[in-house]
Amino acid sequence: MFGAGLNRLGRARARCGRGARRWLAACAGALLAGAVMAASAACDAPRPMPAGEPLDVAGWIARMHQAASRHDYSGTFVVLSGHGAMTSARIWHVCDGEHQIERVEQLSGKHRVLFRRGGEVRTFFPNERLVISEMRDAPGPFPRVPQTGGVQPSRHYAVEVAGQDRVAGLDADVLAFVPQDALRFGYRIWVDRASGLPLKMQTLDGGQVLEQAAFSDLAFEAPAGLQQMARLMDDVEGYRLVTIPTQPTTALAEGWLMDEASQVVNGFVLQGCYKKNSYKPLKNKGYKVFQCIFSDGMATLSLFVEPAGAQPRHGGARTASVGSTRIVVRQIQGDAWVTAVGEVPAPTLRRFIEGLRRKP
Amino acid sequence: MNDDVMMRERLSALADGELQGDEFAGAMVYASTQQGQADWHVYHLIGDVMRGTEVAHATHVGTRAAHAADHAATVDMLGRLRDQLALEPGPHQAVPAPLVAGATGTPREDRAAANASVFRWKLAAGFASLAAVAAFGWNVFADLGAADQAGAQLAAAQPAGTVPIATSTEAPTATSTAPSTAPSTPPAPAAALLAAAGGANDEPQVMLRDQRLDELLAAHKQFGSTSALQMPAGFLRNATFEAPAR
Image (cartoon, one colour):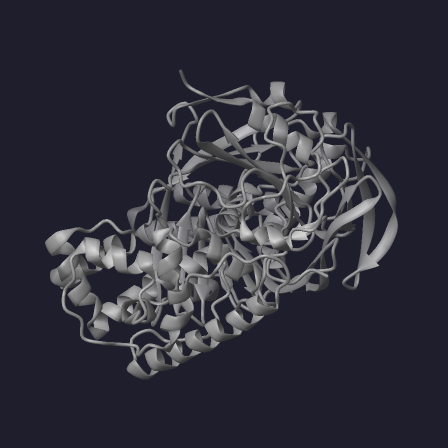
């Protein structure tokens, strides 16, 4: 289908090659139509599994990633923590050529509606009439390149198809991602056989399910088109809009040295460091923090460093967990505080904390 | 218009405790106007919302009736919290009296401009009238940092919307392989809520909420959790923080 679009484009160009000026408008129209055809071909009906060898870890991740980016879909998503806490949300995802917009409306607890487009996340709080806009990455071209660069998950996980099942009304393959060491968690993922969209995902520590996230119902269509979604996202009438700018930085620029990530825990790669320009209501005296993000292709962890002079952390150094997320808080090198957060076991987080030291 | 912007900046500086002398006086005067109160309310609302703190009531900024309702709800919430604290077993650090007593104050009073040192002394001593605190909302304590302990204790006592963060204390050593020992008695009053953690590993045992941690968790989930799978679970996990755990 992509090919068909390109052919159109080629023919349109050929037509324009005749060069008569008064056909210019028609040429432009044909080119545009061709371009639109080619572009919209990238965002279409579910694609079947490629025939041939079974996929490896990287192949499965790529297929799941593409499916999540390139299809229109909408459904109800439910997340359950190992302790029994449950939450759900309604998700709409629309894509159209170069653009995709995702809308997530939280159905449990605090009412919020979140839009994601390009590198911007905009959260509406209807009860408080507040909109908070945060920009992390510069918007990139479609299809968006995977957000994890330089990783080789095939080295650290093994994948096998563990069976077949039915989730949200769709037939699915059950994939088991088995970690090759004790520094990461395992996963069981139910993937839609037709499109590759992940329908259900369990995060496992050994045999124990730490967290489960799944669509309870799903359709490959969205209630609104891209234009409508964009209008919803831009409609801040009656809301107070707050923009929180984020800027990229490096640990070195913030005065810290970090060991090379793969030396700390094999397979993890630094994805970037960021800091938020402080927004006054959030700013307590001396509250400055930067965040460095690491990933191994499946799991992600963040290191938050609050420099010396930060307010003492209530509760002190400790370990905590929420669902499959582990948190380790430590004071290092004087009165700087480090918080490591990630969907990895706590020892992994501790290793990253130890790989951090102040620049002399 | 420019004036408004400047006054809003002053208000936020006031919230951070950064103003002195004339500027302080000016900001206090502005804060006693209806617009000033509306702005103050919104600043704290933004902070709460960013931290994922459950707001006890829905409110629309800018109407007087809403402010009255807002205030009444705050009073009610503080009353319930006080009752809840009374029921909690174990030692309590005394909640600063003003935080609770002041809840009965009127929402607005005319105030003479006070100089900085007197204002701070009065807060520290816990003065009873608390018109200022009542008008500004109980969040001012969290912002001034004075009641970090009390704030956390109150948060821990919240009946709904509690972050189900299970936690145990971390042995403050640099060795990576040392398992966490049973936690030493933490000085914080919220320690009363910490069950004996035991166990050689860091298995979490108790529920404790920390506003700072909420913010960092949110930042990780929203932007840091860049799972190659692109599942929306990254956003939603924020939501699991709000459901009470068993």
